[in-house]
Length: 416
Image 1: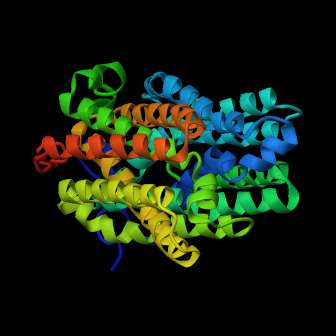
Image 2: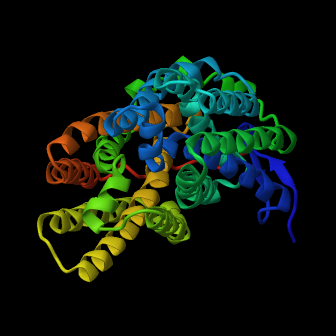
């Protein structure tokens, strides 16, 4: 029989039995927050041509929206996480969601590219804060033995952003214009903000926790956490070199055009969503093997796409291999992200919010670097872009394999 949440040692709110309907609802709200934020972040990926035509700028210039977004998020994440470290966690989350709602309203009415970039910058300011606190909030709601699965539930929202959010905004952009797509995200963000305020507990930190957060945590001296963050930055850079231009890869390499691009983007996301339950349990019990396997799979998938770009195959074979490669790309890329964030929170177990903040800063730097350099590589040809992407993914996988204790779970003493 399900029982209500209990307060554990150290102020952790957990369910002492199976997850209750209330905890499931709270995790759903957190997943919805992640869904909305990532949908807003990735909106330019599916609407590149529409935004370029509407604002009379080039496609590579629109591609830099992701890079500027990531730059702002990378610069502001750690300071904001430290500034809000003593806040109740719900307050920090609500601040992020309110900024997201306002930013989408500004972006929907932007008369030019500069205003659009500034509107997106507003949500970018709190993007890292939101993704830094949302996973630790989820892990505080469940028993420690389920923390990996709680983190995975948050990434279900991120995967749904790719499965539903990005294709939906791409389709809306094609049918009714990109402004309508941004306005739809603004409405969803407002609804999620109200739901989060109503459903989530305040989650104030205990006196003991307050002594270990912010600057006192000393995460920059945590070797394991720094290595996780650096390898994350390398891998994410490699991923976004190619992913920023996935719509063009689908069109020019796989040979899928028009509205079918949105369907293939959905396949990418659906594969990532289906991968989540497959990695949830291994993430708690065999995190190192699971993470390295996903990184190797991602590397091989990019090599397959490189071969497709290099050699002309019959159209049917190209489509079959290409669709399979895009699906596997989505599965491996979406599966490895929660593993790396869980590794970061394990490495900084005394202050998981701060550890998550450092991880998210590294993640955003990777997005920024990948988006910027991806545009430069793309101008020199898709083969150059794929080579750079695969090289960095391979380097990330090699680094994870070389550090044997990177994914170790800390041994905790039972509460007395």
